Image (cartoon, rainbow, N blue to C red; front, side, top):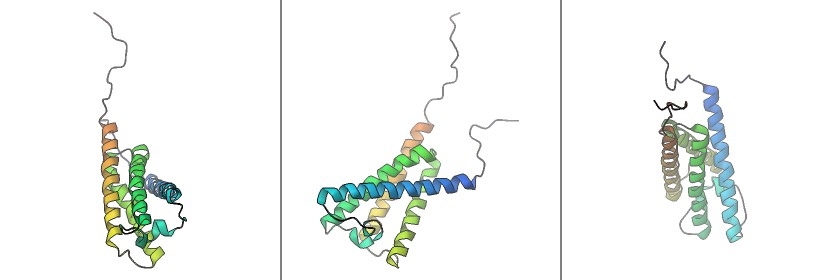
Length: 156
């Protein structure tokens, strides 16, 4: 009976729990980043900042600050991938899943699919950042040297 380095068993409960956890991380930290950005310019907080695609834009200061919050959130979510997913091969899957559910949430909130080019650009850039940085962090951890002999050394 051969042992496998990392044998994987299909565990749908674990996958669903990880998806829910990543969604919680995504919206919790996005809310915190938006609250921080809003405190800089003393503007009101609302769900429109998260789900309304019309607010993300280059034309207004609020739109540019919201974009910065989304980009900072992708960095925070990359850390979430590193801490909770821990597999470089799964980072892209979880990143696309998080952003797909965000797109569905925006679709439901606005009653139609987001139509602004800036919304799509920001979300594609955030997906790329989250996936690449998360994958980099996970791969660094996975490729860390594994100590083979940890016993005492004897001089002969």
